[in-house]
Amino acid sequence: MTAQQPIAYDAFVEIAAADSAVVGIVLKGSRAHEDMTTEHSDHDLYVVLTDGATTALTRFAGHRTPELDLVILSLDEFHSVGMPGFERYALARARIVLDRLDGVIAQILADKARLNADEAFREAGEWLDAYANSLYRSVKNDRDGHALAARLDAAESIRFLLELLFTLDRRPRPYNKYLVWELARFPLPGWDTGMLLDSVDRISGTGDVSTQRRLFAQVEAVVRQAGHGAVLDAWGEDLDLMRPQ
Image 1 (cartoon, rainbow, N blue to C red):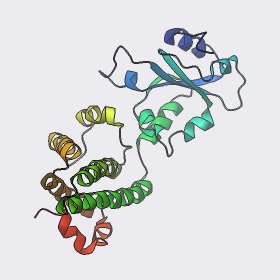
Image 2 (image 1 turned 90 degrees about the vertical axis):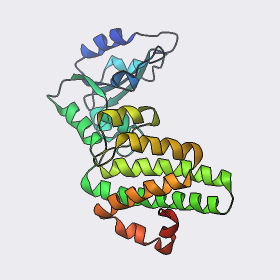
Image 3 (image 1 turned 135 degrees about the vertical axis):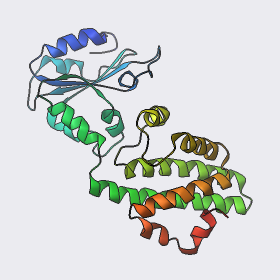
């Protein structure tokens, strides 16, 4: 199906649901997030086929219009999407339009929404080290009079910090567009959402060193409790520059 032959969302869902090769239809993106749709929002669909199925629906492969984007794939391929990858958060908060497998599609989405313990522990250590690296560079650059570099490093540190905090909760980090939405509905345990968002906003916008240090003090307590103290201890005396003065 090309841009010259568009099809509406409702019409496509009706066709796909009538096809026995289709075992699941999943809606992702802004239309899967309550109160996030706008006049520009399209429908992003995953259409999941029985492994090895032959269907005329493949003619819709690659369909992309301002109203409807389609990805058509096998059940086996659907298992692997976002594991790992950028799509993991999108599918973690996706809505099921059709599940012909008595909950199998729902379970696949649930698995994408929850990191396993070993995966989360390993990745949290990596994100923590990346966060500490950018934070250290930012405060050091600020000390040495490199204002632009300090702000850029501060902004980069926020990316790693958010990855870290969501990974500690065994969740994929939301896209920036959905950060406020996610935290309003699913707060990070042990964190004051308003304080965290205010700090993220201030650090990203100004690189304020005192805010970075205060936030780091809270992060340090959390990650040590989670068993990642060795990652920070490897920074040795450099930690003193990151901590509140």
